[in-house]
Image (cartoon, rainbow, N blue to C red; front, side, top):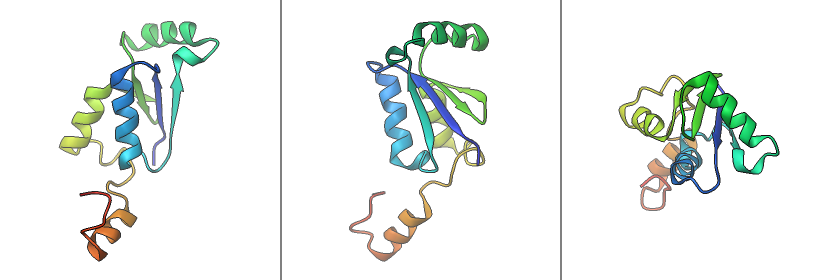
Amino acid sequence: MRSIVVFGKSACPFCTEVERTLNAGVGKGGWAYYRLDQLSNGAALHEELKSKTQQRTVPYIFLGGELQGGCSELKRGVYNGSLVNLLPPFPPQEAVAAHEDAPDRCACC
């Protein structure tokens, strides 16, 4: 599985949506989130990210060290299935089992 790393900012609604999406199951295999506004070198790191990626806005989502884009790209990839080979299985196997055993109490519906 490839590692997921996100660079964002605390007050960014798109960063919050990425965090929600990853916590909801897509990133259950583990991921790292760095809030640029809470890092002592965050402003310099943001400038470096802009320079290296040509993406001007947060969040920056990296999978296996490769920039995938921001919130829209993550949501699109989850929706159309293009991230299936890049991310852990979704829903996680335990969620599938919970759904099959007690569909009225599962977390996915």
